[in-house]
Length: 111
Image 1: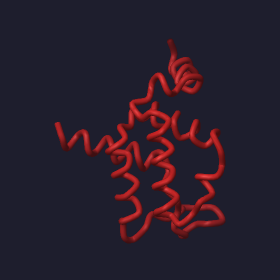
Image 2: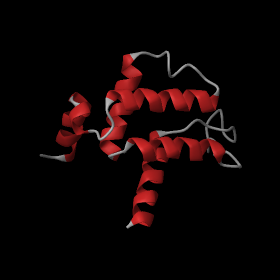
Image 3: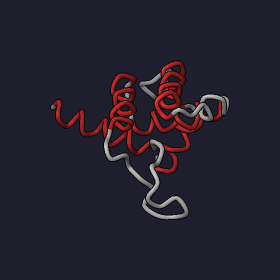
Image 4: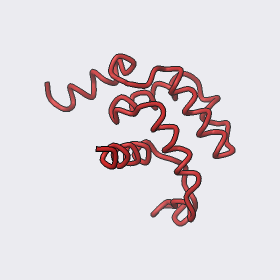
């Protein structure tokens, strides 16, 4: 199977491939909203859970480390900023790549 084939399979059934169950992805989104002071993600509906769930499956996120990644992101000073575009220089929200990078570093340090 090619990479696009794998991504398509994961996207179609992320709950089979992800170490994080749907309830954990919901808790992760709730934590993100709480720390960002923004309820928009939490009220966006099931599609946002699926979108972040797909990212969790692709990144092979475990619940505990993903939650720590979100806490770490919001504790950073200075906060990461948008590099370009209309919001260049403004603090940005957490991205799936932030969580994946944190998890990869944590696993590398643990080995």
